[in-house]
Image (cartoon, rainbow, N blue to C red; front, side, top):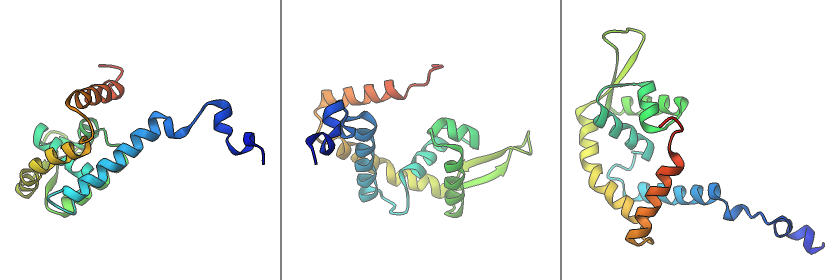
Length: 153
């Protein structure tokens, strides 16, 4: 087998391991592992946590509002809502003005989960970025915000 056949990425200069999507995915996988190892509730996922945070920050919300607040897609948020409701962390009810609209609200047990989780969340962030110095941390957050910024904002 020639060197050309063994290492085609050298010829075209493309290495997937150097690409932003691959590196972001690896960093996110590392973050998720750190989250699961350090969460105060072993059954709480990072996306469930973000959903509870959005409800605490924004108050009772529709599914569409949760999608916008969390950047979680419609199909995924439905499953998250179902699991949080089954655990008694949120309540699902009809909107008073529009009976077709469903509203999610944080319940006291959901607040308790958040209260226990907030100090752990700060630790999780620190552990995720532990290899970065303070300037690199600021730069990383700035760049991630810039990459993920919506076009209309």
